[in-house]
Every structure is written in C-alpha cells, then in structure tokens.
Image: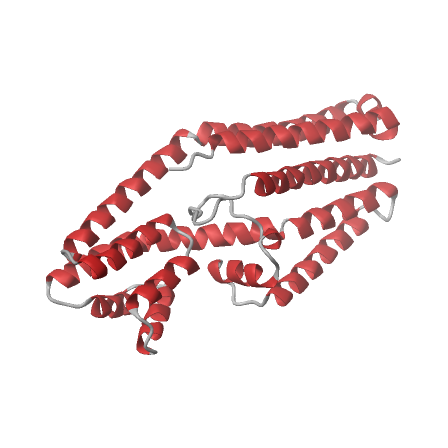
Length: 305
C-alpha cells in the first residue's frame, strides 16, 4: 500500500467515524432537548433539523428563514449532486483503491449529512443580519411615532430606507395589511416566520399596547434599549468563550496533524494504525472520542441569554 493510499485511508476512516459520531450526538440532542411549545430559538442557537419537525413544510420554512429561494425538492437534489461529485473526486484521488473508496465514500456521506449544518449556518447568518437591523428599525419607528406617524407609516419607512433581510420581511407585513389582515394578526405571523425572541418581545409589546393603550413611542424605545443591551451581552459572552471554542478546534485538528507528521517521519510504525485490524479499531475509537469531546466543548461554550 503506497504512502498516499495510506494517508487517504486514514483521512477517510477518521472523517467517516468523526462525522458519524458528531451527527449522532446532534441527533440525540435534538431528540432529547427539543424546545417546548412556544419556545423561540435565538440567532446562533442550534435549531431542530427540518427532518425532525415534519418534512416538507418545515424544510421550506427553514429555507425561507435562510433566504434561499429554493423548494425542498430542489435543495435536496442539488445537495445530492454535490455529494456525488465530492465522492467521485475522492474515488479519483485514491485511484479506486480500498483507501480511495473509503475516502470518497466518507467524503460523500459527510457532505450529504452536512446539508443541515449548511442550512443552519445560512439561517443563523440571516437572522443575525436581521437582528442587527431590527434595533435601528425600532428606534426609527419610535422617532416616527413621536413625529406623528402611525405604525403603518413607520413600517413603510422601514421598507423604503432599510435593506434586506428586514426590508423583505416588513414588505410582507405591509402586503398582509393591505389585504385586510388585522395588525395584531400580521405581527403575530411575522414573529412566527422569524424565530427571534427579540422580535417576539417587540411584536407582543405592540399587540398589548393596541389592546390596553399606552405610549407607543416609549414602549418602542424601551424594547429597543432592552434588545440593544441583550445583544451587547451576547457579544461579550461570545468574546469570553473564544478560548473554549478554539480549544474545540484544536482538540479536533491536532490529532490529525500529529498523525500525518508522525506518518511522514516513521511510516512503518504509524502505518500499523491503518494496516492492522486492531490499529484501525483504535483509529476509529479515537475519532469517535475526539468527536464526542469537540461536541461537548461546543455545548459548554454555548451560553443562551
């Protein structure tokens, strides 16, 4: 077995077991720690997978939240083609050897399973962009109400002066209002489409104000300041947990780099981890333990506010 084939075999075996262990832990988390009824996930938090929430409608909702103008079927088809392409590249790199087959198959499986992680990343990015704009939008609404505008007029100003993603969301609210949907219902539907606690707080405050009365501008200012302080605290927590997140990356990547370095220095000795059944079992067990360690480090440094 050539040097390149052995390295491909190691990377394929390690990646296959690491990916399988990671996704198994994520599935266990979403099954046992799913948010209760009425809970709203935060931007950056781990949402339940679309497949765990009931199929096509849930996936379509996640695609919309991620800003992807795709149907669930099209998304799956494109991701399947990408996974097959990555697997084919792995097969060619390995020269159709056992190591190359394992390498390509592992890459293809991990690519296919990572579609949820990609969708989650795009979704969190868009929600974070929305949240950055939302505080300024609330302040603009408060100033508009102070100057004599109605809530509907402040929405129109936001749709004109802001960019996506908040422009598209507010435009959809305005379309519902023009079709005769009551403001309370349109705000509630908006909070359901965008799963952010900050938006839920603001829409709930507006709905309660319409039902009980009160100073709209003062309520909007208070909500905007609360959200601003909340975002500041979240950024401080992320800064303080940077060391822990880096530890997770080092834990996952250092063993791979160390093995490659030792393999290049003494391939006869380290090659036993790939040629002997016990060595392959040890490699697989190590990959699973590293995946578990990285996963639990990620759970520890993820602090919800």
